[in-house]
Length: 223
Length: 276
Picture 1 (tube, rainbow over the protein chains, first blue to last red):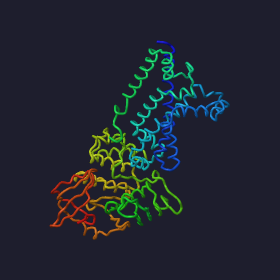
Picture 2 (cartoon, helix red, strand yellow):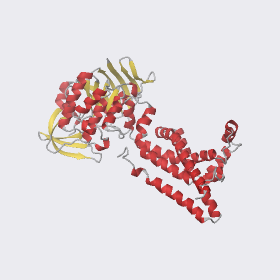
Picture 3 (cartoon, rainbow over the protein chains, first blue to last red):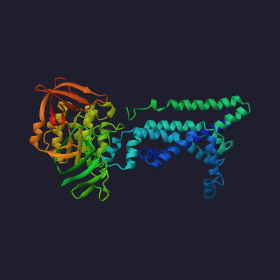
Picture 4 (spheres, chains in turn red, orange):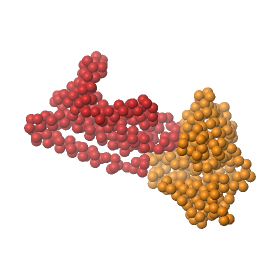
């Protein structure tokens, strides 16, 4: 197997895994807030979280490019304070992936939290639990199927990302060249065997992950 | 020591009456029953006492400790109130076993010895490693009661705690509850449609037309009758209506979810809760 193939595959898996892990950390408090709050700010925030689902990736990619570029708000801060260039680099690509995959992580977790009976939270409060203890000891353990779904959706969605990768990452081999870009390049160059190898590998990983879906896992809170 | 309550609280449209006003005192160690028709606000009152809802206006004081005072803008979070509650839907934690559910409550000012005692008394030891979704309605109810008791609360709120227990189990649980009450002396407020069955109740409250009032014993006795079950009409949720007969007169009475009344059974009912 070619080195370039393995490196691209490794980068793609690394991006998907890092995006999933980091998004999980950010999305749990966000989903919890959205699940508990009914005010106008929460509704506005939820709309913002959902936007990447409906907007074309190139639109998001374009604005992220402006934001993360050396002259952009975030890009200039990272460049000045950390000497880190965000566009056409793995960290920039990671930020872009997190924005684009945010709804795939937040929405299933929020739905899982919404489904839990309010009395569970009330009983835990009466048993002396703080709101954080309630989240960690009661709400999250009872939302495991939703969390698994969110993780799998986010991971598989990031694996196949194209628009954001193209706009923010460029196509630098070994740094920002992901499997989706490699497929595109291979087809352009009429290297169908190479495109096929990438595509079959992605399909295999995706099918494997979907087979681990929540329907194969233990009883949920509703059962 | 006493819990002093004076509050007014509006209801949403689903309730039978517009709101609830209540002024009463519960003395430490008292066992008090609370009655009223469905939707009258019994559960709402328990939730207000537990701190799970805030009254629109009013005060709740445990001695000099303020639990809630809308005028002063003070509200004590439920976790500081030392209140135990058995919810109508039981609210057992699905991810924890029976032992885990009790241990969860026991960690908060509980007593490990008492936990084991409750497991034995409520027949939960053989079910210790089972999860709530693997239990029957009656077993779940016993877990919920034991879980509330293991916290050693100073105020114990029981919302229809015996509705899914058969008669024999109900008696066993009540006998244990009485001995627990003697030993630990919590103040108990008990909502029960068949309050006549509960011995040891010192005072009876009733919510009627949105107001809480105290009933005297003679009035309560006057309303207690024995009747024969003629039929049980249940809805999809499992709760329903008992059709009863006594001396040629027919009555209807709420049948709690999970109850196992059969045609021909004799039941004691609180006539003031029954309709013609």
